[in-house]
Amino acid sequence: MLPQVFVTNSADETIALGAQLAPSLRDARIVLLRGDLGAGKTTLVKGIAEAFQAAAQDDVTSPTFTLVHEYRGPERTLYHIDLYRIDTERELATLGLEDISNEEGSLLLIEWGEKFERLLQLRDIEIVLERTGENSRKLTLTSAN
Image (cartoon, rainbow, N blue to C red):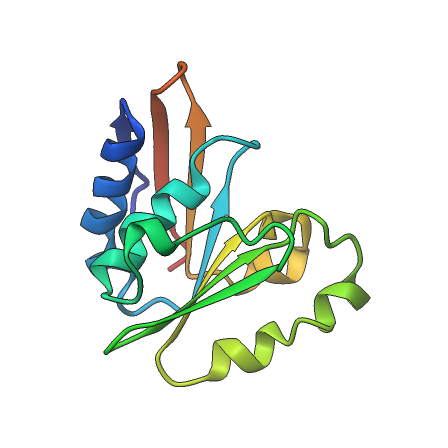
């Protein structure tokens, strides 16, 4: 599958794009979200979570300090994971991501997963977010298949 490229010009458009992309994530288990701080990764998750009826966009916040937020929907359970503060494989192992990813109906949305080669190999989809202006973003979705 060729990469798909999208451009958004506001946080609201990024949330709407997340909702639009949700159907293409239905069969995924692990989605890596790549981008610098403030690129819009959590903003995108707001739309994805709402589309899966797992959380209202206002209830989705960055898991920077808690590391994992869980949002339960009728079809899928979304795990929004932030590995920014995780530096070693040992620390990563304590999160139990393998167990979570093997749960029926789980979808892991992982920020900063590119820090770990193992996650790069396991990902089903990668979404790269690039800041192109104060409010504009370029998003590139690539399937690992």
